[in-house]
Amino acid sequence: MVIAKDIIMPMLMAFFISIMLLPVYRFLKRKKVPETLSIVLPILLVALFVALIVWFFSNQIGMLVKDFPQIKANVTQHINSLSDWVSRITHYNDKQQKAFIQDKSDDLMNMGTSLAGGAAVTLSGIFVFIGLLPIYIYLMLFYKDILLRFIFMWFKTDDHPKVKEAIYETESIIKSYLIGLLIQITYMTILLGGILMLIGIKHALLIGVIFAILNLIPYVGALIGNLIGVLLTLTSSQELWPVITVLGVIALVQFLDNNILMPRIVGSKVKINALFAILGVFIGGSIAGISGMFLALPIVAVLKIVFDRTESFKQWGVLLGDERPSRSPMTFPAFRKKRPIETKSGLDK
Image (tube, rainbow, N blue to C red; front, side, top):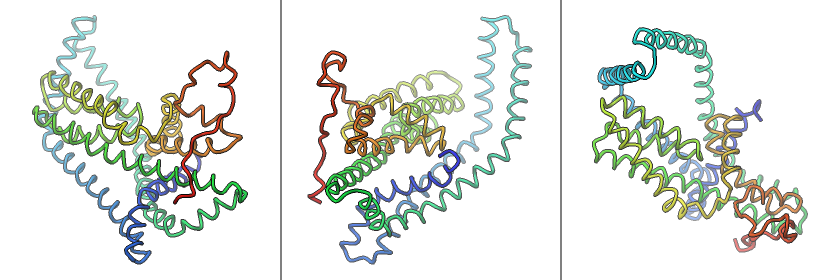
């Protein structure tokens, strides 16, 4: 999987986006729109959405570049304050600290030079990834009936209702999860960015969008988002109160997101326990980087659907789920057995 990640990840991403676009495709088909247009129009909507995100980030980065002299002055002041604090609590004086910083800066520059070629390769890989996505999405929607027939042909006729159930529930969970994430990005950007703007924090919208996007990576993303928010705030202010304010607002928005908003959107659909959610994120990241981390949770959710409906793999479905037995299986034999899983009927669609 690591060796073939450049082939697998665009296909997986295209698969999930294709399922999210299915309602638009079906709506256009019902309106007698030609099939090619019914596929191309939703893809163009996705391309427009991505273009807006790219435009926003380029605009915000342009603002950061304009503020570079002020950012440099702020960073210098923070470094001097940190240097004074280190001098007070340790035996290292200013000259030793500057020598240490200069030494580490040289190491970072050398590392950056050695990675420049790799970065170019990565950038070309991103362009190939983006270029392949619309092609894969189009072909998956165009040939979806062939793919469905291929799946059914692997199973006995008596098992086809179960297969149909799994396909419908997989589609439902992926759609609700991905659309829920889009809703989550929107309201977290508005809440976090809006509150920070009202308080007067510089680059409030950029902090809001970065945190909202990184928050899509379960557990790990929020930590990285907090760190980036603090760094952006430090570079735009010479005082520490904005940093405390940003951390407080992020904590408030996260509390609302985790306990009130997100459970109502996708929480009841994707029931994966925290242990395997975190494990899935790290495995996805080790296999395919950021894209693997983003897709980890929906992939694990799909695997759970399949495991729950396969007699020989039900124990794996239990392991991935978050339904704890009410009694210990060590003392109550009833909780050692495989039980029927509640599923939606696949015959009513």
